[in-house]
Structure formats: C-alpha cells, structure tokens
Image (cartoon, rainbow, N blue to C red; front, side, top):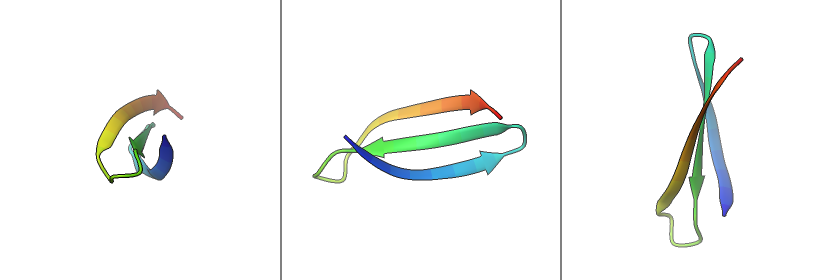
Length: 32
C-alpha cells in the first residue's frame, strides 16, 4: 500500500492510499 496524498478539507484530513498499479485501495477521513 502506498501513501498517495493528503488533502485538507475544512477540519478534516483526507488520505488516499494506492497500490502499485495506481488503484485506490483505501481512503481515510480524520479530524485535524
């Protein structure tokens, strides 16, 4: 699993995880 990017939307941190093929394998939404 590769850490792709973190986006800040308001008070939440969105993290997108991708595998080696570039497919999204997971998304987490955490309060900052």
